[in-house]
Length: 398
Image (cartoon, one colour):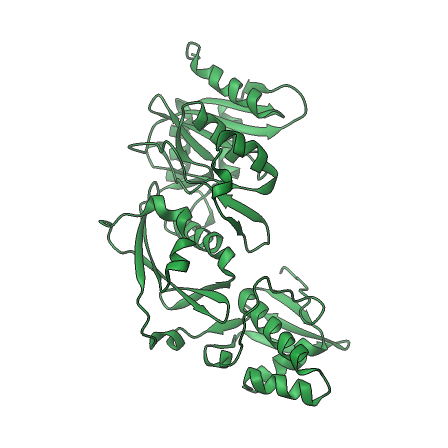
């Protein structure tokens, strides 16, 4: 079991967006039923069964948690803290920070019925996630929230049937996302797009059926897929952007769906650019600074770029699979054998129930039988793109 101590309270809870009013919070949240509060060597601890984690609370946070267990209103908790000698403004901030952070951690449940009676008009947008054949309808109650969903605008399809329905609601400075009346996340507005992308990705993994989900960028050249796989930080996204600038069609920068026949289709999420790659990416996409900075739940910042030159008519037969790795020195492109390639494919792939069955293994075998297989080591993006581009200016290997 993973043990994680997360310190909450006065010295450690830092909200990125401060709600102006916490009154009435008890009307839409409650403590999770699978949490347990106890004392260990004078340290107060909360265990969450669903998360399989423990969280250490300082004295102020422990007091707030206990009062919530007694169903106290947040305002009443502020009053109790003030009666015990704490400044009321400071007490209000502590209660706000604790409740807001616990909501984001998922230690508090949000009651969707709280939002059911409002008369706000909702804006519905149905997305058809190409490559994964997944339909998602997002329902929002404000244009401000709709504007935060621009990373998914290229998926919009007014003719697509409603599939999964995500409902986005706001309350007290937080955004709450529900799927089939089940709260999946509470977050700040800047975290909304990453949260929704993560949930859609989870649905793709869960509903991949006979497909293998391969962690790779997917480009298309000469009506064939070029799959580029590497560990996080290897540079798949920036290399994909460079190849698109060189004339390749964009299939996706993170996920490729491998069908039973071995053909591949990328899932064209908006390319996610992290701060360390902004300067390089801006040389390829001068419009980069037009895109808002989002924040992933892990705190990392990212910009989502509108994909350009989208691949048409997927899936395609796979012509090239390139495993990339950063290494000091000149770029080097070397053939690898099919057994080694299959091993790497299996390491970087996902299947329903977490294992490859015989049919999925056969799909990977079919994919690599007619593909050229390489490892690319590089330190310079220009050299890497030139090495890959060189594959298309020579006779095919036997």
